[in-house]
Image (cartoon, rainbow, N blue to C red):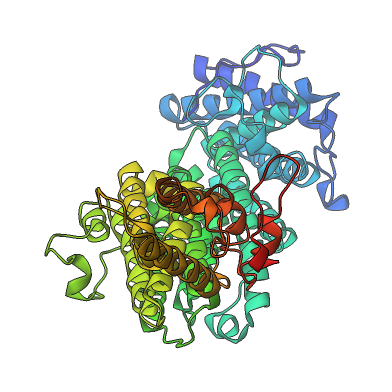
Length: 608
């Protein structure tokens, strides 16, 4: 209870008073001071003017008078308490003082209502939150009589605080609280409505098509951030400031004003989590989870009262429900990849649509790394045992990278990619040409690695994962080269230290011509989508062919065999220039062998 010294602002006595004790004299001074203010600011005929209020006493121009009025009422209350304690038999004086206090309180209650009502815009919770400065920070109490210059909004808050303190200390707590709750609750409801938040039942949410669902979730996400960070935060600041003299009153007001709206806000995510689950819905669900998760510390701070514990519980329940839904959708996605059953081989051994789809999905998941950390669990999906072992019985790099992961998110995302690679490995067996199957594996794994390198997946999986899988791509390409060009290279490979018979050597060259053309023909429709990998592969193949052919041509002076020479070693790169583009072009020999002014090789007569 606040105690104030008696005000000196009272009327001068016109005649001596009968003997009074000190407490009675003090009360009489307070009565006279209060009556002086009521005569100046309050209509004497209240019954004739039911709307009479102290409507001007707390205006900007008269604020000093308004605060003096609160001061004399506090002095009157202090004096009444003193007489009741020391001279309780002074019934007439006490009754007079109580009647005067009652009159003043009725008008102070109306003034409290007027200040709240007329300053709705200034006391908008969002504005209060954005303006939350130390002078009215509820965690740092300051005196309402501080001499620090205040803005008009801060002055309004101080006026409300002084009025509330006065009413509560004078026994008019119920009237004060009732007025405050009525106005402030309507402001919260109106603010939520303006933000476009719609409280949809679970039944209505279930009936929404995906586009409508997406729009509602986007509205919810935008509204929730404002509601927590500004609306509810501002209301908590205002409640704690206005009722700083009574924590229980501040709690009661804040709880009744915000509780229903806050609970409604966090019931919506639970309804979203209960909706029919599908892989494409996971990212909006993650957005809701991430938003609430990021706001949770603020929610716990703003709704820290015991009476608002239901809000904290509802927010936590929302996260649990959303987390379960997210985990379920990841599991569903994983199973759909494992069950994918398309039978058609991709022409040219390019990147499979499944690879693109899965990697785009996993890349997006990696952007939610922090949120997923508290959600994902290990997969229950088994993989073929032989996938973890190579032909020597050693553990594959892919399986090793997955099993050595350091976090649940790393493990689960690596596992999703592993499921994809298992499926791609299976699809590679659809190609009759073994070389093409290896090229298909290299293309797809290279695509996977490039998506990892260029996204947050590199942070999640780590550089070791990338290095291990780049080694796997190199292995696939080496196997492709061996199968696709092995016969061509073998046709000219000569480990003999002695020269072959010319007829034998010519047969070897003819075999080279045929093998080269056949290899080119088979691969003319094959593709390597990545330009860097494509050029690197062509360079590697060209170098190997050029080295073998050059050695053979020099050893046997092939330039003299005009009747059978069809390819010149240094021009082999030109023949391969269109390879891996999927053009289907045949090996264009004649134009490449025409003599140029720079001294390029001649086309043999038989080839013209």
